[in-house]
Structures are given as structure tokens and as C-alpha cells.
Length: 188
Length: 188
Image 1 (cartoon, rainbow over the protein chains, first blue to last red):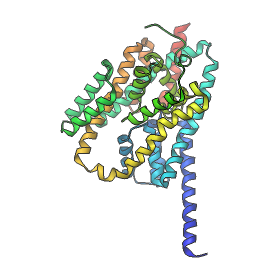
Image 2: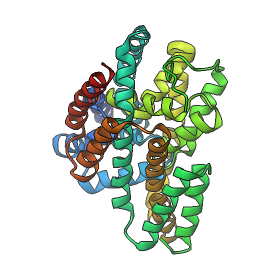
Image 3: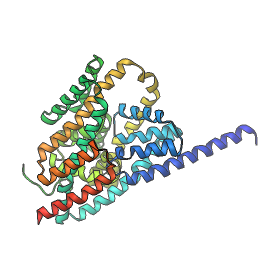
Image 4: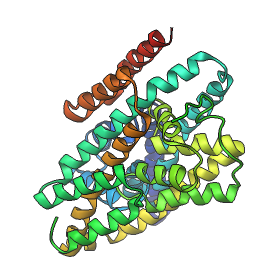
């Protein structure tokens, strides 16, 4: 066997190994991600940077910035990590590994919830969890605001966006576009 | 506001697969800086599949289940309308189409990231994105008007996660117990 063929085979082996590692790590994280993907970001950072050495901490922060820049769920950061490690196949595998197990668990959980339709427990749980959800949403917004509001202009934009969403029926997309334009004009 | 007990789970109108896909695709493609504000815009304001109270209860359930919250939301709504296939349809719209877009952005990120105009636009948009999430939380709070026990668990979640940065997993597990216990006592 000539040298080129050997390295090609080795490379393929490495890629498959990387895909298997991605699947293993993210499938486990998927099932402990109570509260969503932001809850396990520090753990993802630990695995990706410290345990596997797939990238530096600075590269991780860059990927996070791209994920914020792109529309869609925050969970898509894992697709970028997979892409960085093993190309497009890595992106697909990481996405499926992160969302698959939790989605199946969610599907099963809701079947169970449906069977409790006439149980008083279901109403109790739903009523109990709604305010908890609102508290967590506000915590997410507050955390993001602390990161984003580095100037009085940015702080004002956050306040205005908060008020518009809370008390008017304006479409959030227009608020974002407007804020982007104000940013370009140099006020953020 | 009238109280309906057949909230999130059963009150869905008939939804075609095309509408299901289009709705979640819209959230995925327009949800910059977090999908939640867009999810409320599409599900509550535009499609009227839920009112704010049902939406808050649904998000509450999706938050305490493992996995990305809006991904869980797509699984619940998708499977409720078209079974496992519906879950897959909603997931695809929400996740896989935006992932493709994000990989395209990642290819160009290095050149885009240095551009000062882009940086300014992102600074403005991310300040507003934080406000959109805060505003969504405030709106849900005003619309659902939780009782005192709910305000307590919501405030505890906000302070523990947003201000004190305690690990989300443990905060949620602890507060679920407190919230459900308080609700159960109140119902007796």
C-alpha cells in the first residue's frame, strides 16, 4: 500500500473517531441540559477546550459570536463546534446528538403529561412552572443585557426594546433591524 | 382574563404540515439573539394558537425538561399536531435550515467580524436582543399575573440565575420542588 492511501485511510479513521467523540459528548450533555443550552455552555466549554482540546478558549468565544450573529436557537453553537472539528458532517452529527436525545425525552414526557389530562396534578404543575419560566426568561435577558450594554446608547436600546415588547404589539424583527441601524449610525 | 384548564396541551386548532413548517422556519430564520421573542410573536400574536398564559405554561414545561427550550417547544407542538413526523417537521424548520445559514455565515465571519460597520450593527442589535427577551418576560408577567407564591419562585429564579449565577440545573430542580409544593398547598 502506498503512503498516500495509508494517510487517506488514517485521516478517515480520525474523522470517524472525531464524529464518534462529538456524538458521545453532546448526547450526554443533551440529557442534562435542564434549562436549555445556555445552562450547559460552561460544561461544553470544558469538554471542547479542556478535555478534548478541539480549540482554544478564544476560538470558542469566536464561535459563540457567530452563533449569536446567526438567526435561530442558541443551541446552534453546537453545530459550529461540530463544523470546526469535523466539517459539515460534524455540524450535522453535533446538532442531532444535542437535540435528539432530549427531543425523544420531551416527546415521551408529553405523552405522559397527556395521560394526566384529568389529574389535578397536571394543572398544579403547569401553574407552578409558568412563573418559574418567566423568572428564568428575565434572568436570561438580564445576563445578555449586562454583556451587551457597554455604552449609554446600548443601555437605552435595551430599555426601549424592553418597553416596546412589553407594552406594544410591534414585531420584534423591526426592533432588531432598527437597533442595528442605530448601531451603524454610531449610537450604540 | 378567563381561566382555561385545557391550556397548552389540548387547545390547538387543526394545523397543516405546511403551516407547521412555515411557522417554525420563520422563528428559526428571524430569531436573532434568541428565538423566544419570535416564538411568542408567531404562536401568540400571529397564529393565535395560544394565549400568553398557555404560552408561559408551555415554556415552563419545556424549561424543566432537558434540552434546548425552543427545540422542546417545536417537539411538543409538532407531535401534538402530526405525531412524530410533526415533531420532525417543526424541528427541521427551526433548526436545520438555520444551521445551514449559520455555516454560510461562519465561512465569511473572519472578514465580516473586523468591519467596523458590522461591529456597530451587531452592538446595536445585541443590546436590543437582550431587551426583546426582557420585554417578553415582562409581558408574560403582566399578562399572566401570577399569585404571590408564583412571584416568589419567579423572583428567586431570577436572582439565583441572573444575579448570583448559581448553576441553573440545581436552581431549577430546587425551585420545581418549592413551586409545586406551594401550588399544591394553595390548592388544598
